[in-house]
Amino acid sequence: MKPLVLIVEDEAPLVTLLRYNLEREGFDVAEAVDGEEALLRIAEAKPDAVLLDWMLPNVSGIEVCRQLRRSPSTRTVPIIMLTARGEESDRVRGLNSGADDYVVKPFSPSELIARVRAVIRRAQPSAGEDVLRYADLTMDLVAHRVTRGGAPIHLGPTEFRLLRHFLQYPGRVFSREQLLDRVWGQDTEVEIRTVDVHIRRLRKALNADGGSDLLRTVRSVGYALDSSG
Image (cartoon, rainbow, N blue to C red):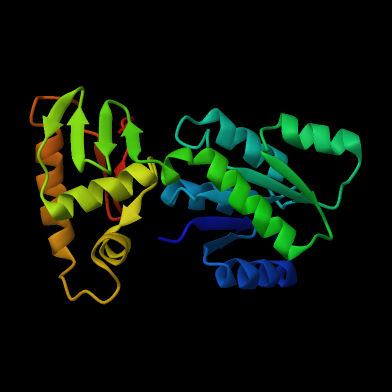
């Protein structure tokens, strides 16, 4: 399951360099050339980390960072600021705007990737744990048990894998194609509408006791585990 990194940068050669190194290290990559496009892309699919240039057209990197930190759905997205401004006052300003890390150009791609891994690891501590939690949901990966508000939820194997995937990326919207790829596997011949069938089963199981719907349907896009929907 590849983490998604959004590169927000208007220098094409640097984007090419970053994409090459990130993909080689096992990341999925999305791109945006300015702040407005970055905010739109993040609204469509929440990334696991953002590489954000300070000096951007239209909306600056600092303002993008502030907007992401103000929104409950993106407040915890890891942000690494990329900039040619290396003075201490600039570093402080970048970090105060909400950035998790600050990298001055030019930089070593291998060092940057190590920093990307570090901020993702800090933001998703549950990725290496035996228990995943979101709202009142708990999934015990060792005992293969799911509870909501302490009450057991009985899931089939596919629904269990679906929920596990959502729990690892809360708030992030996945298309049906992405879910087929990540839950069923790339070589599967399962039809796309099968995803909807299993989502309905999972939703029914999660809401059996009348709880709020934790699965958000994003029209024409896909699904997310999102209590705010």
